[in-house]
Length: 185
Image: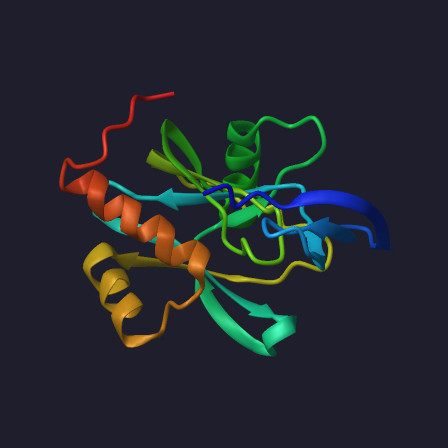
């Protein structure tokens, strides 16, 4: 069965500094029509930064759309013409102050497939060296280093509940069990 929807017309209905909203008329598989509204996103990276003591770097950050503070793995958007690995290195350094000797690509995920084309590339960073945070203007966060076992417990009791972090931690657990094989970058 062909489930493809064919774009008939489209228009950008909003363009902000970060996101763009598109509204398209589409033909559905049965021949009828519908509207699709979605957000264009530049893409992002997320970093699982694991130190030699088995502690993971996390961030506490206020997220305006939900009006609350979340505990998350470091992440950030990909700048134009930037390679995702470059973004991961930059974001880790800016947000945490740490750099990593070893990098592994874990995979990619699409967090909001019903209304966005966003893709998040996941990296594991090890061989960490501490440095100084270089936060962007208007960026405020608190860095935490927590034992991985505690972090995993936080995913089950709701203290870590954003999809980006949950996916990354799932892949990190698979990597630690030897079920996800990643070559060093």
